[in-house]
Image 1: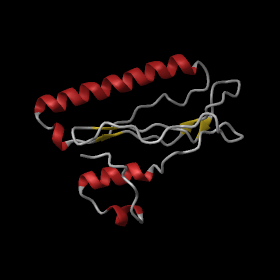
Image 2 (image 1 turned 45 degrees about the vertical axis):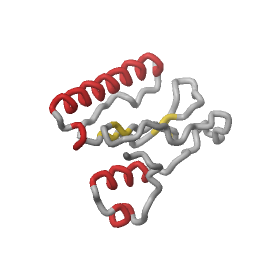
Image 3 (image 1 turned 30 degrees about the horizontal axis):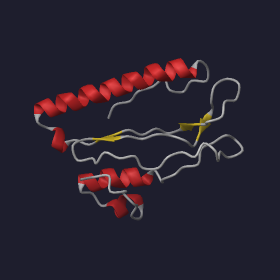
Image 4 (image 1 turned 90 degrees about the horizontal axis):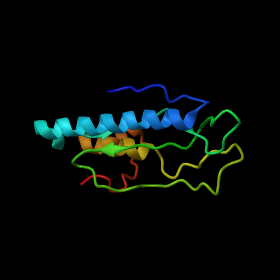
Length: 133
């Protein structure tokens, strides 16, 4: 488990998030290169998650906490695809993006990859959107 902080910004978001996301992307790329070089890539699934998203509409000091968020799955067993996309034309009155998939589907994908009991852990089964090979 790796934890990266600093995303809870309310001012200068564009520049700050650009740097934070570049750091995240670079870290993921270097990690994937290292595990590929070591021969362990088929045994690794990397998954990002966050406890909050961001609103699409600014409130005068950047954007506030909201429902919209992005999650990544990275690894040799992952099919390259995009699942769900925000509808920026249909924000709720607070400026939140409606979730297009249930985040528990991503957890179900990770549990499926691990061979775990999805419905036991999550209480029921969830669509994994064919994200794994």
